[in-house]
Length: 352
Ligand SMILES: C[S@@+](CC[C@H](N)C(=O)[O-])C[C@H]1O[C@@H](n2cnc3c(N)ncnc32)[C@H](O)[C@@H]1O
Image 1 (cartoon, rainbow, N blue to C red):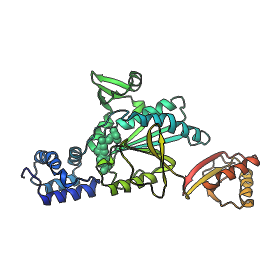
Image 2 (image 1 turned 90 degrees about the horizontal axis):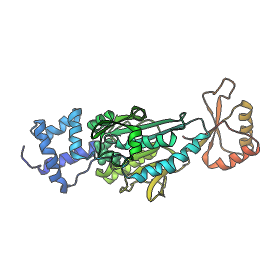
Image 3 (image 1 turned 90 degrees about the vertical axis):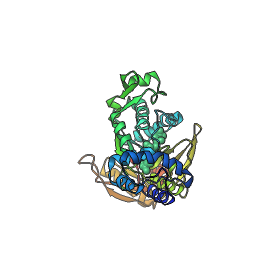
Image 4 (image 1 turned 120 degrees about the vertical axis):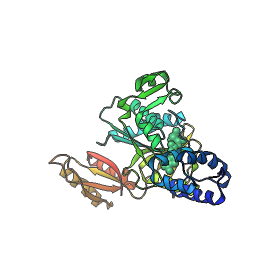
């Protein structure tokens, strides 16, 4: 193999990287590609970039090394601290207030492109700090990255002094155990909140659940604008109504749909909230069948659109059905329920 990448090889490589990982390298980046990939090619003892592409397609280990050579896994705890201030001071308290009324005391956050897990752990620390006195809450964080090497390190949970440099002594003591002079291991109670997954954002499937918050910071920076837009739309779909998308501090998002993502400016940062759309509903569950019937009568009498949905009974005397009403009617419906002294046992946002 020569010490240059030919025009033909560049095109083959560019198309492969774009199709397979969403990464986009302009012709001006050929020298960068040469510097990163040709030493790796020698290490792999292969003859051509074509061989390299075939190998990377199927070999897990070399796929990771290949990606690591082209992207940066650089990350650290509480990177861009204001995002974590927003999580601690604004997002989590609002979620707790909203969910306290319902039985669903759970919060799910996704760190997409989590690298070695510093971001996922910073989220876990923040959630733990806010909810440590509320043991009945279930907290769940997914950390995903395309790089198997990065996810292996995330599972190990050992971080250098430089990676934890922004942590106060108090938080370091509370959540880490020293390994040696310069390394710290995250404590199991925090690590247990996080599930790490190897996941290429360009491939199916995506996590089959809805999140309250998604962080995808400094991960789409190498992607083409159209890939960024496609992925942002998918992030939107993976959020619950009212859920928040947080891109990197210097990133702008390339999709807001038909204004479905609402841009909010908090603490000097832009974050994106999933608006309540026409497919958003409120589900009301009642303690007794007679309450359900009274609620139903109100909706019929006032000509509201509604549906009944079969649910898991809370007890064998509670109703087998819940009422579903479009979210746009929420204020009027709740006023009527309140006037009739009707108190739903559970009230939950659902999208259909
Ligand atoms: C610079 S790190 C960002 C880590 C963390 N989000 C932060 O802001 O500190 C970028 C990560 O994106 C990952 N990445 C790049 N392309 C990806 C893809 N197609 N799917 C999933 N992760 C990807 C890389 O492996 C890398 O770990």
